[in-house]
Amino acid sequence: MSEEILRVKDLIKFFKTTQGVVRAVDRVSFSIQKGETFGLVGESGSGKSTTAFTIMGVYPPTGGEIFFKGVKLTGGVKSRPLSLKKDMQMVFQDPGSSLNPRHSIGQIIELPLKVHKLYENNRKERVEEILKMVGLPLDFTRRYPRQLGGGEKQLVAISRAIASEPSFIALDEPTSALDVSMQAKIINTLLRIQKELDLSYLFITHNLSLMRNVATRVGIMYLGKLLEVAPTSEFFIKPLHPYTKMLISSIPVITKEEEKLKPERIISRGEIPSPVNVPPGCAFHPRCVECQEMCSKTEPEMIEVEENHYVRCNLYIDQSK
Image (cartoon, rainbow, N blue to C red; front, top):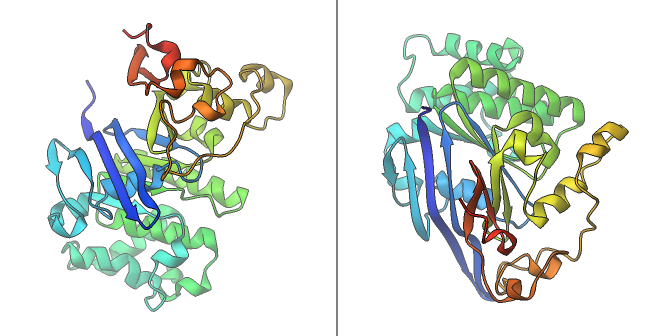
């Protein structure tokens, strides 16, 4: 039986604004096993990044529970012990804003070693080992972020994340701002070091097709809620939620064979509503092509329809295991 490294139970994160309460994350539950990549996918404003930030303590949770290696986490990152910060790291979407422009690349990677008192006698050698691990030249230690391209900056951010020797990394859209060739390099690097270092990933993205080759399991978010969670192999072959079907049917393909594997084309209707004014009942019902009368009144619960395949939809209320 695989070892559970992270469990999120009924996680809530609301923000008070002048326009009302933003329900960014609303009772989200999932778990991640050791060595697994859990992909969290959704449109902009779905709450996927806020989920990651709350798990990592950037935002203190409004409600719910977070367990890491069986230990319950409370509050924000400032209240968490240094040993936990060492074991949980994050790679942000924009490395340009997350890297200190006044520090050299060598200093940036060395900082976690100093903070966590690692490799005190051979830190410079360890920095060079990490650069080799991510495929960057050793002379980068003397360069500064402004001298690097976007992909190189992201590899530095990954280097900094693995420097503290964590077991879990949250990746917030790490390839979204990069060209295709650099995206491939970043993904290949992440997959390789995951095996080498036995890492577990929470992978945040809006690119559903990317999940096919990266994730072990996939979760779909919409307006702060998880709508469907399934193993990747089943997720793309047998999507259940109308929203998931809509997303998968819109993935661009090259060959007719790939087109046959996709669900029937579903045209996207409307835009994702504001999280300040979440529609009653099922939040997706104003855009759903399979909407029924009850969907505008009754909010569905997440149910297990098939083994390890969960869906939040009124169409399946009589099919739970």
